[in-house]
Image 1: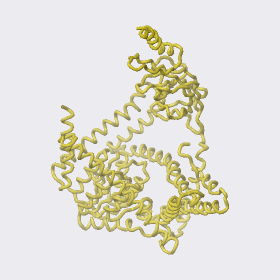
Image 2 (image 1 turned 180 degrees about the vertical axis):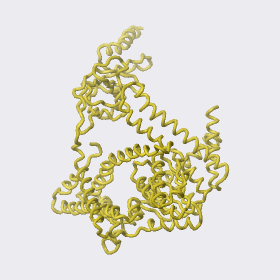
Image 3 (image 1 turned 90 degrees about the horizontal axis):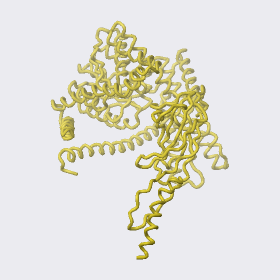
Image 4 (image 1 turned 60 degrees about the horizontal axis):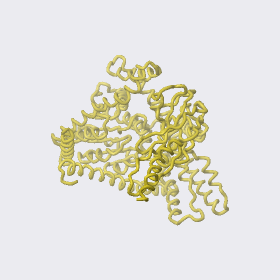
Length: 419
Length: 209
């Protein structure tokens, strides 16, 4: 009986403790007494401290470096929700959730990456950060005005190496370009896949069947697509001369527009604008596998004698090439997609590997300018090989003489992943 | 109810597309034309909803961002393709887009495909404490990279010790790399097939859980 009288005030103290701790702003972890149901204590999470905002260097005036002091006690904190608004704005609606940082991550981030909520140059912002629980409940810290506004820079100092390398490569290409224009003969080694293009067009002509040309499924921004469209021009010119039917299905609307212009121009240059069929180049769909279904259906119905797959390809490469193989067509593929090249190599008669695709245009055209550019690219490869060979030698010297000259050489080409 | 209909439609279309494995047939043709047509229409609606409306129409209607009129007009110039007399105007947005893409892409390509690759290949063959397999790996990587680069020289005949032997080793290295990629990708494709079979046997026929 006496024990019960002692237990009642003890229980009352235990029940009062959570509310006291909240009132005092102190987090205390209470150990529940076995067998007794306690009310769920209000977590009253500790909130982050001072927020520091700095302008980010080498940007377009659209990024700020935001850092904050994490709370002393992170118990119960799942993440920090960083809110931002233009300084002076009022009301809860004015706040934008700029970033969610998991509690284990560093408490510094670059604000302005999300294009939905951009940082405007020269605008002063305010920040407040909330400690958030796993359930999404937020406990806000004070509001801080940014110590800086975002200012853009004209020159990105972190990209000097890229500039130098680009200038060097461009100069080399222009040098050989000039040599080729002066009539200096340049050798080009034969590439089987490119030499087979004429043979493939001839085969289709003899059989009286169409030629299918797939310019990849990427956008016009892809180098492989541009190379493909250049080759399409050359191929279409020969097709125009032989009057062989051509089928060019497109996945990208802009690539379709360019492909149409290229084919039309090729027929014009071949002196056969009347032979151009406006329905030969067409848009199919933007959906990757729906495009494959459509092209595969065409292959089996139209039975083209020759299939060209030149450009950028993804998972559809094997589906296309395997169906083309079943239809009995001669197939020439070319891409710089490393993951798709093995599929083309196994299913196509000829495959242009990586840079061979870019070189194909020069091979087909035999124009001095393009041959010069090809020679220039070879010179660039020579420089790259020189650097790797030097690194090999310097690495050996480092081991033998206990020096660090390899690090110095590496620093010349080192470029951070994110500047 | 709607979920059941969706599962049945999905399963029947899966079988219709698989019927192509036997041969090209009217059922495949039906599925092919439906998927091409629906995806084209759906793509257009999605483009309007996630790009044209929120990024162009809404900001313009809000009265701000008048600068968006420039890309808006450039985009509209595409439609001139339907009017033969002024269809040449559609070349302006194409030229603008290609030029911008190349300009933005050039330094990125130089960094990602040249400088960072060169940096990655500049590793020491040996350092104190380095295990033998790392020494072997580094040697294969450096010599393999050099040989593969030799293969891609177009202006030199692949003859002699340097270009002849180098390019032969290079193509071996490239093919070995492709072999590894092939196996890796096939594994991914088989997992896709397993997913589809699970859908047919589980979600549709309830033969498996």
